[in-house]
Image (cartoon, rainbow, N blue to C red; front, side, top):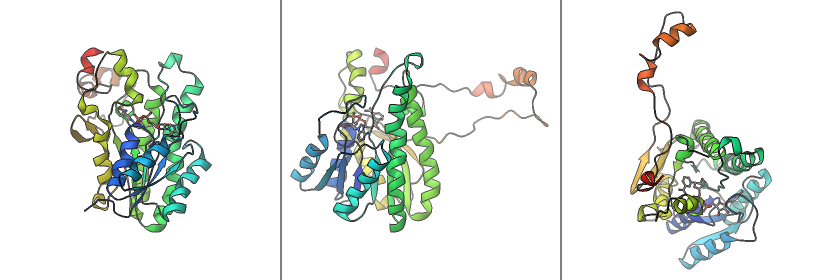
Length: 298
Ligand SMILES: NC(=O)c1ccc[n+]([C@@H]2O[C@H](COP(=O)([O-])OP(=O)(O)OC[C@H]3O[C@@H](n4cnc5c(N)ncnc54)[C@H](O)[C@@H]3O)[C@@H](O)[C@H]2O)c1
């Protein structure tokens, strides 16, 4: 039995890469899909491309149902039209996958304001925009599934990704807030950090002269998202999940792991004296774990 029979889904940025695989998989599981993609270049400039149309053709060729939408998630009114496309064509909206993304990687001292704003605009604000318009529709129906696409770059940090890391960490934060706020209405909100050899990661692989292995097939992410989008995952809310090789993974929610206590509170020299023997025993590494093989090439 298909997991998503008669459900209606919006997948943003699903004209290419990982999002395309989400759209194809959700459609195979029975969902009718709005394939949103503005057809942007990797860094967010507009192009003449319309990849959403091709993905809809692929879905229909496989016996599924899909309509394209070309609005930008980073525009508030555009996000409203994305949600409206689902309502106009399929009468409801059950599933939202916030996947659209761009990158403008630079170290902090080379990153200008426009690079920061553009990346935050698509990932962070785009996720807010689409969810802001989808949530009232789902609340009214008493049912919804929202999956926000995050990244280890935001959860653990990555060199050269101030803008992207900030956006992806912010998406984790919004996921926790929305899980609390929307959980009461039968809506679950989870985050997933996927992995895949797409144009977004191509530069990394080319630089390292690295042939991506089969484990970086972007299609490998979609089964977890299809499950999270299903009725069966009603009890999974506010979680951050991921994928490494052939494993789906669960991230630990940030929480305190060590304490230094002094009745009445500390003064600075007291902290300096006791830090290494207390909190300093538990300092944690930062930085994301690179795919197998690429870690040694760096
Ligand atoms: N590839 C990876 O290894 C990896 C790892 C972690 C997270 N991610 C995340 O997965 C998601 C998909 O990335 P990908 O690797 O498939 O990249 P991709 O570049 O192949 O696909 C992203 C798609 O989003 C579209 N898009 C960009 N701006 C848009 C906008 N304003 N409105 C609508 N659509 C827009 C693009 O046109 C493109 O088709 C992103 O959120 C990315 O941050 C990817």
